[in-house]
Length: 388
Image 1: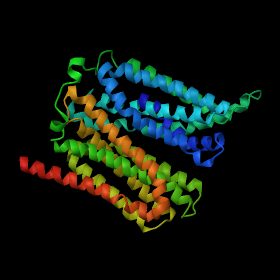
Image 2: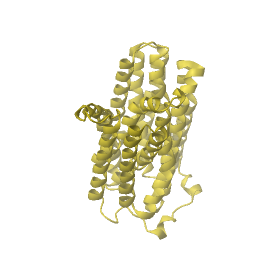
Image 3: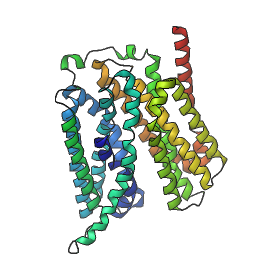
Image 4: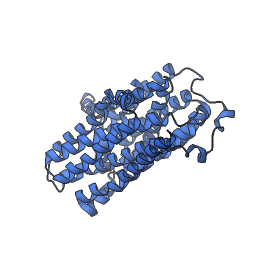
């Protein structure tokens, strides 16, 4: 949890400052959001390779290496901002996205350290680290005020914040090296290519449900969340401070339910919590379609955060029941590639859809994805009844 809180602070820092840095470092405003897009693309591109390297060489060396790569990338971002290099800054956010791909796999390491019946609770509690990073990342941006301590230097706004991020990632590397014993969670080369074939794995209805729950929940959340500030400050004519409050409330709603999501899964089962997450998602759509006042945005984004938590935690914990140890790297890699690949497409496409279809059109366009999850959930219930 400590390592994840430190390392995940990169994403909110880049989301908060990347667009401003892009606009300052590149003369064409069309390139302003490219550093933020590079973060998402870097994460989606690195998920599969990182999972395979961890499967081959062990999680301890791979995770520590990725944190150290993040240290280099953060220092590169600091230097690029100092020198005014837009492309250097964009390359650094891409590498920080790749670092984030490793951070997303910390949850599997934690889940495998406990008994099967405790995995849902661990997956849930580990997300509480997101609350810390959601505040730590923006707080790092305040380090720019320290530039007044160096009157002889002209320091751009992000030199010190990204130097602070480098320190956070270095601390995460030290923690990981300390807490992951050498050789643990490493699969022998002879076993790494063993296990069932993909066709055998996908004969499990619960594997479909696990992947669909996490990936569709993530995609719908990112799709709506990304478009919300644009809609609020555009069509609704609300100010940026109100949009910031709505997004902060949404982030709290994403992670705070982790205090009890694991307990709910143990009490009522995966399918019941996935169904509840779907109900929260549908309530989000109803509230979003009801109007464009501040209250509509706030309630819909809070409901969206809770729905995401139920779907993502349930999907993550259920995935752990779908593979054997020698299959872990392949299944985890495919799962996260699917999640973050779809998230990247959803995040990058939401602005265009909002422009073409408007807020109501964007909200309604989530229904096909949610309908797919409903069908997979019904299929799982049918398979369970048939089995009994």
